[in-house]
Amino acid sequence: MAKQKELFRDIETKPVFPATRYQGSKLKLVQWIWENIKHFKFESAIDAFGGTGAVGYLLKTQGKRVIYNDLLHFNYLIGLALIENNNITLSEKDIDFVLQKHLHCKYAPFIKDTFKDTYYTDNENEWLDIVVKNIGQIENKYKQALVYFALFQACIIKRPFNLFHRKNLYIRTADVKRKFGNKATWDKPFEYYFRKFCLEANAAVFNNNKKNKAYNKDIFDLKETADLVYIDTPYINAKGLGVDYLGFYHFLEGMTDYDNWSKRINWKSKHRSLEEAYCIWLDKNKIKDGFDELFRKFKDSILVVSYRSDGIPSIDELLGLIKKYKKTIYKANHIKYKYVLSHNESKESLLIAE
Image 1 (cartoon, rainbow, N blue to C red):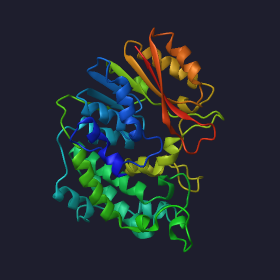
Image 2 (cartoon, rainbow, N blue to C red):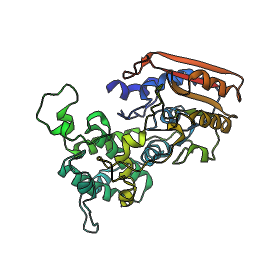
Image 3 (cartoon, rainbow, N blue to C red):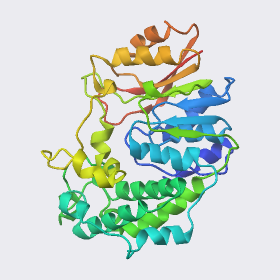
Image 4 (cartoon, helix red, strand yellow):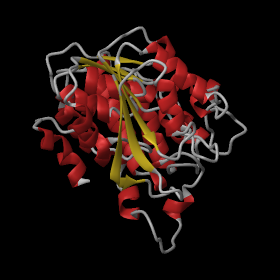
């Protein structure tokens, strides 16, 4: 974790991007990505599938105008907090406001009732109900986004596997010997982590003197253009199984739409996940068409595609699609970076076309 916190210092920047625990984060790869694109002439960049913002943030530190986009609202709030936001930070008063009960607020036990014995204890769920309600009272959108970011980080660190893919509170609470995880970490109070991550969020805010922007759109609906477009779509492995980020982080997504959360839940699921919507990036039969449309949409920009060597479509198929729109294509492999859970020696590749 310490190495991750220092990563952006290695490229001569003062702000520190917070360590993240999200599936698929490119935080460990940002310096390698930068080494492969820094010689290109570009002043603006779109981070098309921005996720938790590691690559977009990197580009911001390099003085580029960054257009961040992600379809998930909780990710968009991270982009709003750390990329679009140039100078707003949280005061101690702001943090205290979120943590206190207020007479003018009516608090409902939605999380406590809906997610009982699912992810957190009753007391922790009650704490979340109060905090999420208070966040909704914050008027400044950047302060609200920063507070959400801190809450997301706190929720993730207290979860086994850092995910919400199954009902497994028992892993935390069972009195057994464990071969993974850290029970002491899981059981520290939410408030401890929340305050810690608020400070980390503040430390990440900086002004690169560019009008950066965060969007919450389907990438095909984005109207912005830029000199360079970075593409890191959800991944489908060779067996046709995709990485369902909404399934992994539905709890975080639900918190950002607290008043409508109950309407979006699939009540048949044991862990109260959200109703799924069709996503071309998780459809092994249509994803190739998605890439083709994406490359055509941004054919006038430098294209930078992060991809795993064992994905669907294959890298050769992607290269064939890019060649329809670009004459010069480079391919870089990260020799030392392999995915631990892949049985096919999956490596990270970078396709760059101008």
